[in-house]
View (cartoon, rainbow, N blue to C red):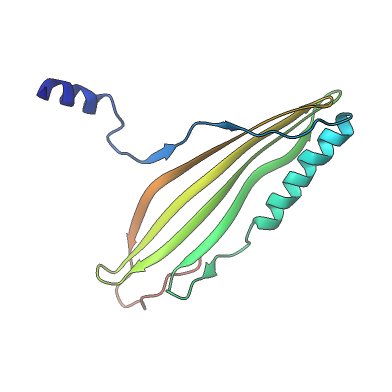
Length: 147
């Protein structure tokens, strides 16, 4: 039994640095043509851009939250083909007063959308990174700094 546990531990990532869930399909349409499909993908892009925050927002408890969008936008290929890939990241920072630490967490949603003519395909995958910590420099107030 002990050998099975040791073998299991050796096959896993010892850092446990992140995790992700399986992709789930996104359904949309049917669209009458490529333009209809493209309009849907471009509207998704605009909604995600509107969610992004240029600076972290302070919370009443001394931490911050920021939503970050990473994307190249909607990419048009040759013919009636377009793709959109994005990652929406959520960065949360909090102060641990007892240990004088800033605790940071990050979770994300990745989207892959495409149109081939009027045919839409899409998927979403969610994941996270393990919490990180950094010491608050000596002499600094116990307030989470803006990034």
